[in-house]
Length: 457
Image (cartoon, rainbow, N blue to C red; front, side, top):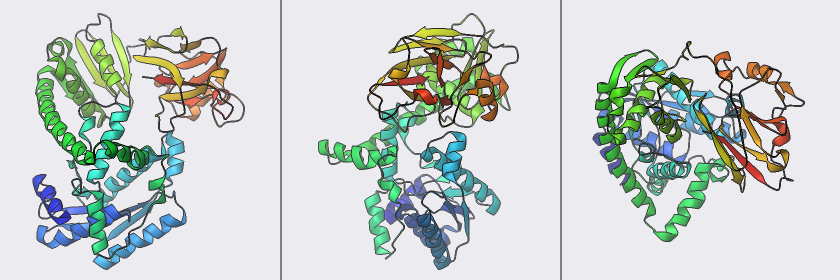
């Protein structure tokens, strides 16, 4: 059964062509072990060459070394070349202020792309399954996502191919069992502190109480949404061609009058496509960012908005510019706003919105634009403002206080971006340098009775 799904998926999405060199991403787990053997079984018939890539994340100490030996054993048994590297993912997460899952993903794909280039591979095969797809759908639904996000994991994107994307994990387990192989087991896959694991181990079983076929239903929903998304993306691409004034490396200019005449349902998709062409991806771009841009269409004065990944959008004289470079003509503006808890305030000077409210518990998977503070550490109101000369705070995890200017330098925040970093103050003290670091004195502890959630949108 899995062999049939595997071949049908490859054929439907035209994943391979004769002469392709395929880099197989193999962790040693059941999914990637199955992927490798299935690829090896069609290697001669499909006229493709295989090269194995394995990355040691250095998270599981002795177990990680055993993973390496297992994958090297597979390579030797199948007579395939292999590249193995190690990356300290925990250190990378700390350095880049990412979650472990995000840092691991970044490290993996950077390794895959670099290795593919070195060995001359034009395809990178990864072992995502139908189960991974529905877990991704649910995670994005919980976090908030639009049509594109709810389409789940694409079977093919660029050089990345996913031949197992329609196979269920139980089918893969049966296949590997029939091969009499004992793949490696990652114990962290059973720790519910990671959101994907929590969805897999807790949410999906709960949903089965309401419908035993919930996974099949979600997968069908993903396929239907994908069809709709492809249609809308094609329409958005056509509309973008009509409103585009010019495009060069790192910048695209659009006609605001023409953009305003595009169907409202297409405008947001058009903006996402334009941003993707400049940024290269849509990582961390939210509904709020797109809504903020749409709200600026009728602005009569020049404006600028900061977007994730160092992208800037600026509107002036009927032209919307999306660029990697901050407009030199726009000078920094000071701002200062006060609000109570709960509350929300727009920060037009930087094109963002700040909100706060109560929370029942910490969310360890929240991104860097969200912070949780002890209510007892706050004064009567919060102040959201631009930085001031002489600002000091106590960065979380650091002993004593530090000048905000020195903190920016240590964190390698470009000078031109510092004016756009909001400072959240309460009771005369900084409690959060928004999006960067919480103040040690405001952190949530075991003694905390009430938690306040801060968010920069």
